[in-house]
Length: 121
Image (tube, rainbow, N blue to C red):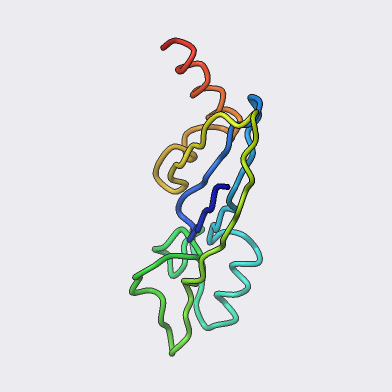
């Protein structure tokens, strides 16, 4: 079994039989439901960022968390458990905001790149 706890700025992707399987859900502050939550609590989202600064809606240890006593950035991790099988090859962990998933077009593109690199040795 593979257990994952996620708070937002990373994506975990399993390669199973050559296909990408997202193991986490992105927690982007620009998602309509996240914007509504932040606004309801007295904050705002500008440029896809909470209070114009934080690109994720979940995180640990962030000073933007409190506005008028309300937590704008949730610190509740999402947990995922996956039973691994014989076709599962590897897991890629990467950053959303400033890294891997910001420059690659999709989780499948990342998996394809890793598979190509592994084939080359």
